[in-house]
Image (cartoon, rainbow, N blue to C red):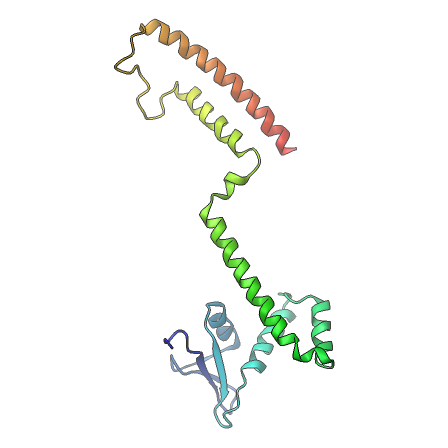
Length: 190
């Protein structure tokens, strides 16, 4: 097992102070919560008795967050948890919760992968129209000069006057298209 896969050992002294055995310093509950958020497993052991206190301290961290208004657990879930301690379901609840959180982590990871793999703007309704509008606007504003050569190609045999007339027609067509796209986007926004 690698160093980061081993649980971080925290020892509780008789004074109730918590001691991080890796960094040789005292830690708070908030520090422990930070280790866990960073993906680290922790194990909290009473120094004198050797009892594992991990569950007790993790519940205390959750209770502190809940009491500060950082509610994650809805009342009905808390009620169901309390009921599960006094019912036959107490043997199934831990497995169910573990599997539910595993499924949640997996789906969350897949969602993050999917979102980073694609541009979220591309799925927005009207994105293609907005992109075309932006391109048309840039062409109209720069006269077709967007940093790339837009002059006649070497095999172009048409006279320059014909090109100038076409360019003005293109600009007018682009302006019209631009206005239409603006109208469509306005409708989408309402």
